[in-house]
Image 1 (cartoon, rainbow, N blue to C red):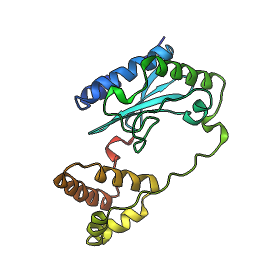
Image 2: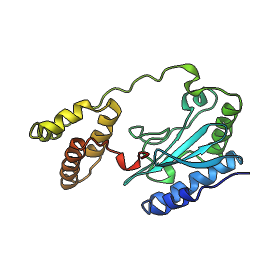
Image 3: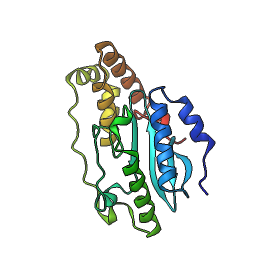
Length: 204
């Protein structure tokens, strides 16, 4: 029997209004594709397990994400039908509406196949190493702001490539100049405190 976790209900209710229908849709599709799936919270985000991790989802301020744990192996078996911007985390990048996702029927098939991979004991990436993503260029205004705060600049350089990418994406996604400036100020503060961009969602 499928097991639902009340923490996932709470996570969905706390998400932004635009994100709730997306998360509820993904949750329903996952349970449909793998009726034996078990819900849990890992790294502060909802995940779905069946003999190991199958997939996970998350909600952020302006977008959602959804990804398969064994994405590279799954892609060799079935088309993932990726539609959305791949700059974000997960299989489908930044998901802002349900239209950014493949049809529910296709997602259901993918979930079922992902569960079969766990049944067969196939490892993530089939033993192959995932190639590193090319680093994003640091915006000039962010560079200038860090030069005025040597501690923040040193902290930024000490971050892992993925954490540097998260800060750069957050800043460049801002649509208004005021929002961009505030995000840079917040980023400088968090970096000095030794925090990653998504520190609020990390397990404690």
